Image 1 (cartoon, one colour):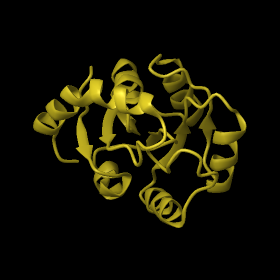
Image 2: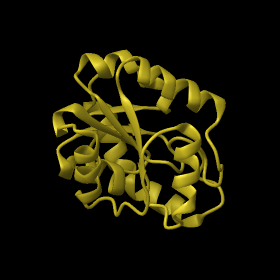
Image 3: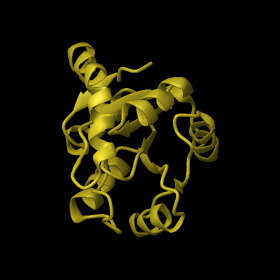
Image 4: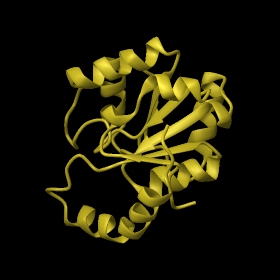
Length: 166
């Protein structure tokens, strides 16, 4: 439950065609430190291009954020033209199920990409979806992030050894 199915450095290591080949139609994505650094209000050009590449493969990107400020995921997602759930309560699986129901997808057709083991990967595992782990974009600025990352380190190392290619 605390190891991901796949591991990469960034979202750009995820090949949309490989996801589609595995039957993935819905890609849930953490926002902060996965898609963009904390505080970046709108999608960058590379995020927009990657989202377009997902769409070309028939995959919907869906932002699933634990951000407690509702305007943050709303503004970002609307600018990107994708659905979202803010204040998602990960790792509880409820928001995962809600997103799948909203998009008409099953757990077998769904994956989550995120930078945190104890929210994104654990939540995805609990919901029965494919889990994709990326490195945090930036740890600077919050001592709690360093502590969390240190606690996750053994699970990241195990994921890197066990993870399969997409």
